Image (cartoon, rainbow, N blue to C red):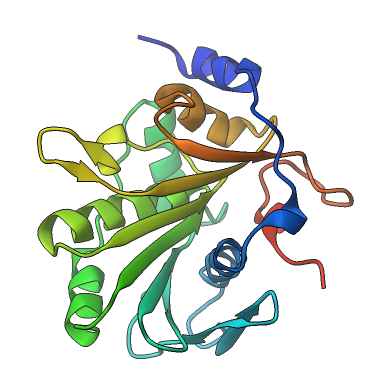
Amino acid sequence: MMTIFKTIEAGVRAPFREMSKYEDMNQYEVMCALVSNESYSQIGRRASNLTAKGSLQATLDTSIGTWDACVYTSKDRSCVLVGFKGTEPTNANDLARDAGIVMCYTPFTRPQELMKEIHSKHPLLTTLMCTGHSLGGAKAAQAGEWAAKYLKMNVRLEIFNSAPFAFSCVYDRALGHEIPCMHHHVKYDLISAGLQSNFGYDLLKQKTYDRREGIDGYHTLANFLPTN
């Protein structure tokens, strides 16, 4: 079995495709980065409204959400965006989950109740967009898998420098189960390197970016957030 260190090395040394540019991120990708960022805020301190690239708008649904997930709806209510919080260094549960990644298992709790609540409240929902950064990316994949498989929801994933997660979350040939997934990855970020090497470039759609000028660190979500 490939060790975690060889996994990281393989991901870092993998041949990169053409580099993506932050300014070319579309409004949905930018909105997902904003929603992922709000998931780190405490309940009651999350932004009520978000705007991406001047036109796409989303409103916080204060009736749904948890301490580690926030829910926003598009202006026409056809799309619900769920952002899952990544690791908080002072949170023992988060650190335990990260330890599970290092030990090659991922003990994430699947938020079935949250998915059921969204499904019940939004019966005319066209798209459920699950997003997250780091550990939140893995949470988003598992939540999206459950919603697609058991609630038959139309799910898409937009994840940022994600921690590794099981490939079956986004593709299961036996069940005919496939979730569109785009992974936004900063070149040389070690955390998400494990994900890209496990999947391979042909199995996981990915955009790779250089670390943004003026940003301290490869892994931080700040690499994907608007600068103004």
